[in-house]
Length: 189
Image (cartoon, rainbow, N blue to C red; front, side):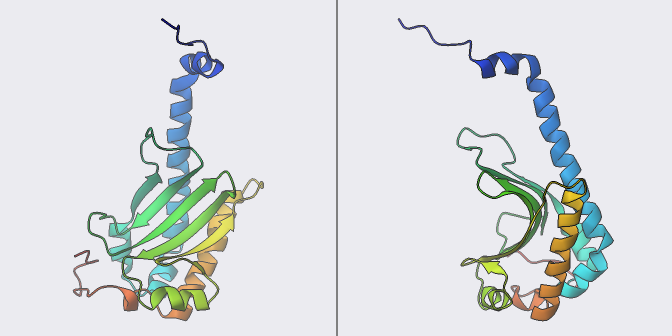
């Protein structure tokens, strides 16, 4: 019978510091989400006007987000994102907006503001025509965080400047959304 190796450096260090590392990850998520929320709250009037959505509707539907939300066996550690998403309901959503810090091995860390549509129609084409990065169903703004002390806050501000400007030029998101009942908030049916 072969003996399993149980003395790896990672295992030894983990036995001493796992709880501290897990707390640091949780605290980092919380602080990033708070920084993004503060920036969104500060610019909510401009964001709502540019998107042509009600400010109260956005505030009510904006929730914290992390990917991966839990640590799974199949997560390879190559990328992760932390932030806020809207609308808060996922199950049968037909569209969504994300305000996130996104990091990967290849691109480093940055702020990503994105929108996705289950059925994009003309939305992605209009956004791409303004120079926004796109794929078949998603469009995004990317601002690198950088090394400066105010890196995250400055990147959020730069991304929001572009985001608001793009949505003003496009004429808001509401024109691309599935039928909505006035005063009832986002419809995900």
